[in-house]
Length: 338
Image 1 (tube, helix red, strand yellow):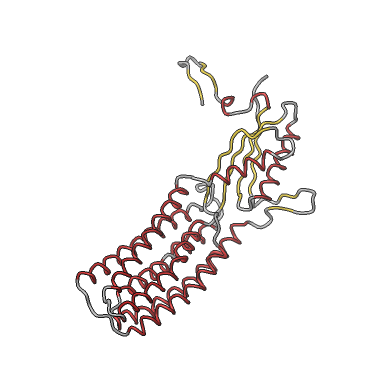
Image 2: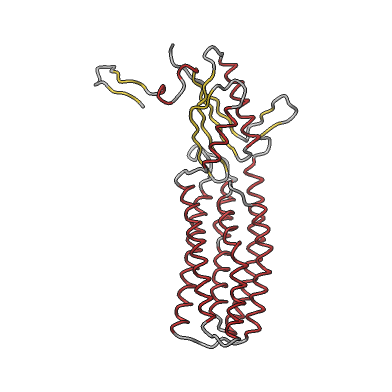
């Protein structure tokens, strides 16, 4: 039997109804997720920047290097709002003839920028802490340092909540900020313990806490780097791939899912499937199965954007049947295509 296949390509911006009284893709999810992300960025930036400005005043008065490290980290986190805002703004642009997949990759670039900014804040905080260990200086206005640490802890909560509501697996840059937000409250409390240590007669407690904050930021950089470069190299969480395979495999008319390929473009997931169906099916029936596969996948994974379904007859399912064996034509040397 001659090998044949059919493809069905769908995008979430296309209206698609099912006869079940509902539709998918009437509103482009990139608009809603980007608006939600921009909203989170704005409020996070306001909270972080206001807190950091207040801490600058206390650092100038007290000379606390632990509070300085926390302040540097907060300014760094506030600065990450810039590439994030640009990325979300670009993600709302429509695809063009040159950028046929749109501008979702801008979010990956934003992720790299975030990692770089956080790494720079770690380097600055570490440098200041080491300098203070080598050249100790008294810490004054301990009550102000304590107040700044408490205010810093409280100031992190609004930005953490806004980022947490908007962040998900599908929005990597927001997830990175959420990861950083998780430890901000702890670093502010660490400043409090450093101030208490100085008050108890241990002046080195302040720069030691500064070093601990630096090490905490380094840990964030390490975790963030793994997440960002996994996305850049088209890595996808294995559990998502397995869910796609399982959902598509249970769609009516699908006998077997032989291959799944997926990649993130911003907060959209693009998927290609190879599925085996009965060889006697018409193109119309195969197309109906493709719509059902899309229907089921869109129900289970809301961040899917593009789904390509390639059909193979059940007798010739698998990538090995897509290879063209060695042959020759037009007087050319024998060759094959894989």
